[in-house]
Length: 334
Image (tube, rainbow, N blue to C red):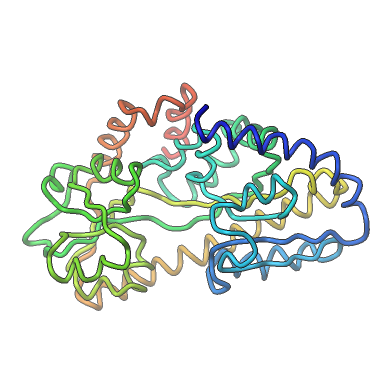
């Protein structure tokens, strides 16, 4: 049995028994909502949940955030919720795909087109079967989608030396990508020669020319000072990354209908607050990076999207995608 399916089966059993055990207990006084996240307390997601979600539910719940994976190890949060050891987390489509392969569609290149498109997809009926599966088989309710940022191509070459317009222009470019198969596949789909390299080694590799470029959201380019050793950013937006606010279904079922409505609205409002803060930060960073001498421009994104989606559709990654969902997602972005 594949590891993902075995893991999924164990957690299904745990979630089922937890639902029976927890439902009566959560009716007492205030509910404690512990959130575990690998993010810091200064992360936009953390700030929004602390400043928006926590106060909104304070009449009947105590919100207790735990940062830097200090409560539950990173990657184990969903197991924590399924086993009753945790009430909330921020999870990714990549993590959900380890249990439910169909979620890989939301973690691949050019599926989401913008922060607004993410929200439209999450709120569309096409997401209902995905959400229901997570509830039924993992005991986790997905409340809202949070915007992490757009990943772009950041290169050592100047725009005069190399202008990136279509995937063909990245042919032969050694582009540092994270080392997993999924990330390396995305690099290939973009047209580049993906080079696996530890994140801590990227600055030096760019400085020495061991790699030609790297891909990350603009905040990472600034935080890691990659702008010191690169000359351009092509705004490919090849991955509009996201997280979901994950909530214990057992705890949810123990809340009154009115309390459930408050929790849902609080999560939606927190996600929107974090989204706007992140979008503003990205906009401000464009100006900052241009002041540092980087050339920032938009390539033919439509050409990239068509090419990358075609590569994915012909790959094993698409085998688990429900028929017609990609077309529905694309239509919401038009």
